[in-house]
Image (cartoon, rainbow, N blue to C red; front, side, top):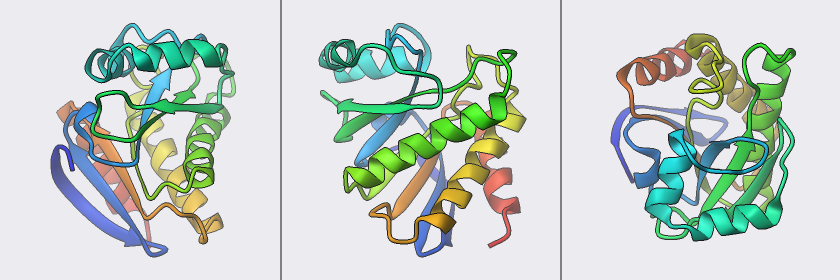
Length: 183
């Protein structure tokens, strides 16, 4: 399905996994793209998604236009092995109310995936790159929000949530956050 599977747990009948790999290689229904509000996918994960998936992703994003912080929108995935890209805008560290905004971004991605009837989704460490959210805190919030969302949405179509990171530090943080979560 993509990178190297490091951890797998079951929660509320759903599979929660941590993967060390490139999100653009994930064979899931949707990958989450941590985007900016203008959906201009030039750098980081967003740039990698467009480079590998093709400019069609940027063209579809241009049609969506502006996306507020904490919200999500979907495009097709072009040449990526996933079916869709769910673009979310997380907070820039220092703008205020970052935790609530990050939780909103994660919940918006999961709500959209569920509304689309998707079964699997891969989520990176939203906002912890160029947006400057401290990695450890950001990963903890993302993982916690996924578990909260799953508890509240037991009838969702989502059957597998994958936390994906390319760098060793973020992978270890995802592993710790998922392992430490009481099930």
